[in-house]
Figure 1 (cartoon, helix red, strand yellow):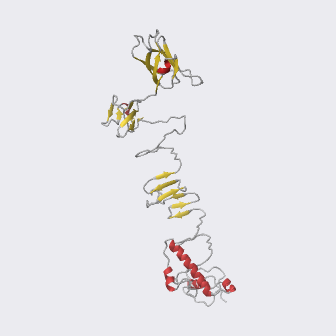
Figure 2 (cartoon, rainbow, N blue to C red):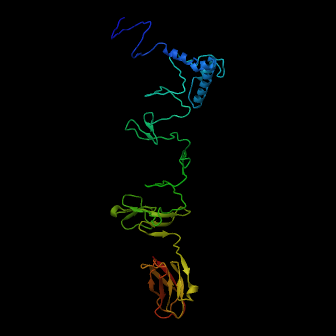
Figure 3 (cartoon, rainbow, N blue to C red):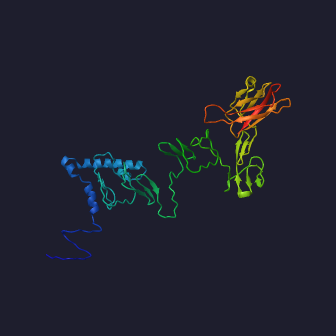
Length: 388
């Protein structure tokens, strides 16, 4: 009996060999064929239960046919035609080996497989039910699908980080069970509220039935002027040191490079019927309609009347010095204009006094008095207008 520590040879022929350590081999001749043959043999449990080899093979073929059908319905190509041409799937007497591929291939059929470290498939794969991934699923080494995220991670830092969803541009993209849908024609439908913390730019037409502040009590502001180069405008004519286009829509002042816009309201003829400039000048094609009230019938019967309108008409009875009109619109800075209708007998009609309304009280203190220095000899009707 010879005992050697190291043997190196090109070719060795042994009848029997016992390896007490680890056997390393790049290739074992005939191992693939033996594995394939072993897969086609009846299991030990089948032998105990008395199952025939033919029945086992037939069941395996039917199972394989079901797998092929599922894979092909998903759009993947298989070699099911090779098996179908050899024999019918449902033929229980079919005794051809389940493995019919090349001798270098191995077909494995198992109920479960556990791989400890690494698993690689050099081709296509198919999972009939669910595929669980513990951490991340990497697709093409560029896209990662994790617990609650999908991220595109290009290897080249110069590559734009653009994640394409439905790159064909066909069909409809639906989010949150239809709460937001994006159609292939570019239409976006949101079944709910949309909150934008930054700027919202509308290139064509903004359609809405109501504009309201986010918080009632705050102002709704429209900015019509800037010094950074926004489109600008003027209402009627250009001010000193400015330039206006032929359409009258753009006015750029020379001082401080102030650029102004204007608010325009269009009518059916697509021409402005009302405009408001950044300087506060307004123009209305149809005139300015202000609420008015005719107090003539009741003012001839009382020296004090009340009105909720900013303008109106009243009458000072003959033989009296004037009349008082109570109004909650009066402030300390209110301007009150009065003009008589007809002759006053050379007497001057003027505003004798005005009292501002106090919003902190329930009573109405606001009002103004109109009259003459001496009693009027006949009824005097006049117009009045409150400007705040």
